[in-house]
Length: 234
Ligand code: ATP
Image 1 (cartoon, rainbow, N blue to C red):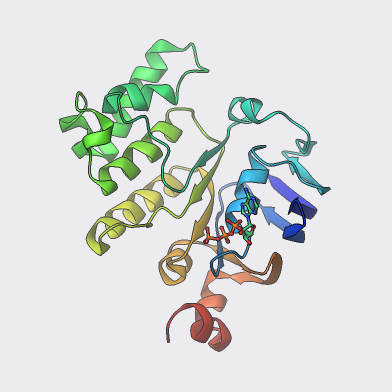
Image 2 (image 1 turned 90 degrees about the horizontal axis):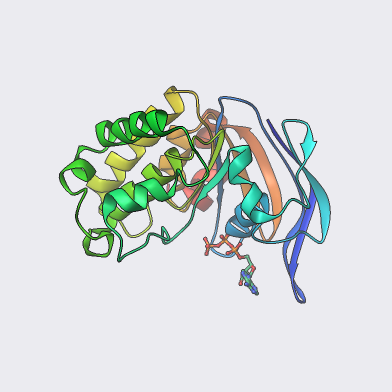
């Protein structure tokens, strides 16, 4: 579904991504782990067109999207849930969710998808009229994921969904991520919480200082002593 070839991204003189290769197959849940500043967020931003690469190619379903404008990515089903969530705090929960469907015209299906999001997140249903800015961090993360689902993503890119959330809420969010994966949505998951990410994913990539240094099944990465020492706190 997604092929990234020799991707290089620089901010002025800072080489944030130094020629990475990535591949994600339809239906996979792939984790991208690495320390702060390794280039994970930059990689996701480049995949959705928010940052332009200096070099390399991004193929989505066989078609090059490397130079595609950012706003067109969502039409192709390539959707990112940003770190910090990017919700509209002065809009209600429901208005935020429906923002995800702004490129769609199929009213009946949008309503169905909205109901589905409320099934996944009953807490959002209780709060549909509440201003999103007054939600807890975990609830805001639910809105951000729900909004992305309303755009019917083919490939969902999640940036640090556990960031700043209490452990019990993190468990809940990851339960939902597993449910979304089980419904067939392909996902690339960037996480500081490497253990949880690898316990959830099929495969993983390890990123260090702008390069991919290791790629393997999630199971093998969890069993790798170097990974355990560097990222799993073991
Ligand atoms: P974190 O987990 O801390 O978010 P990350 O792996 O997502 O880290 P990036 O945010 O992609 O890392 O940052 C990679 C490098 O690029 C860092 O050195 C960062 O300081 C730099 N960088 C990121 N965004 C910019 C920017 N807009 N301008 C200049 N440098 C940037």
